[in-house]
Length: 217
Length: 227
Image (cartoon, rainbow over all chains, first blue to last red; front, side, top):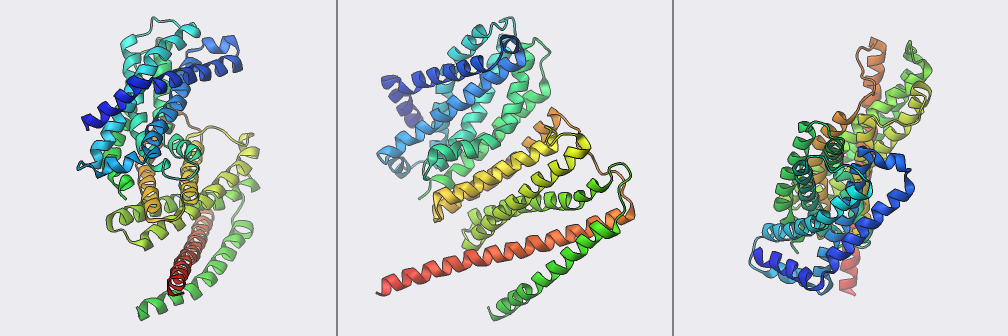
């Protein structure tokens, strides 16, 4: 498992194409929103948090897709599955590498978004990091499972968002609400955060258990 | 085997008639028997089709989940076909809910659509169904795809409580049924019965067509192999 994870990270370290393209894409999404909304709207914390998550979800979707397309291209995935390891471990490797990439991207994009929208940095930074981390974990878990399915169908670019986005609804609502409250400087919203954590736990476990069904030949 | 065939033949010849009668009775009760609701007037009558449709959509979802689980467990082709047929039907009824809802909401709430939890929930459910059906369409019809779809069906059901919880916390104005006049309760009951019949009949038809398609495919392969 660590070998696969290391391989993915090394590949990225050598080429740097995934993280850099994700970073640019996330910025572009934010730019589109900045053009679409009025300056007054942009100052509202609710819009800021929505924007942050829209950028993360769409950039993240491409990242996850990329992880499997790379494996599929030269039929490497079949090789991976021939290894005498549990498919659950392949899942964890793919899932963790995605979490790493998204954390790297978000570490730059999130502060930049706040700065671009001139939202105050006085928010509890620890809370924001925690929420982003939980969101990334849940997103990557479900995303990895869906991408493993989508990549081996025709029209994989379209089928992944179709499957993933409706299933992500709870994560998205919870994350946007927690982030919005944080940006507005309100009290820590425990209920939403609990939903977020529940989502993470449920889908990491589901992904780990179900991955075997998805990848077996 | 023989008894099974005759049994299902009996159901096949019986079910269309039952559906016809039940549906006619339901229509008669909705338009002739049940009194107008005091506040909402005529428009409220659409509720007798709206609510059963919603129940059938949920029923479809549970059948998909159950059949998907059974398929992953035992790998039976019939379970996979059942999941597929139920998903398609669930989507039809979910669409009906989404169509009849706004027809009622426009005169009563003054808007076609509002982001109420149940409306949002139904829309999300519809989207999950759509993804499931499209996955089947895009990915073809192989053993592998059947497993993908089964995983998606189960993941969808695992997600439902979370979706429901998060959407309900988010906001809410949907009317709740509190007290019903006996006529209304009877009408609702008959309508639900009629919808169950329609659901069961369509499910059987769709299942049979899927099974026949399998048979045709097997025969064709047989012929190709023979020639």
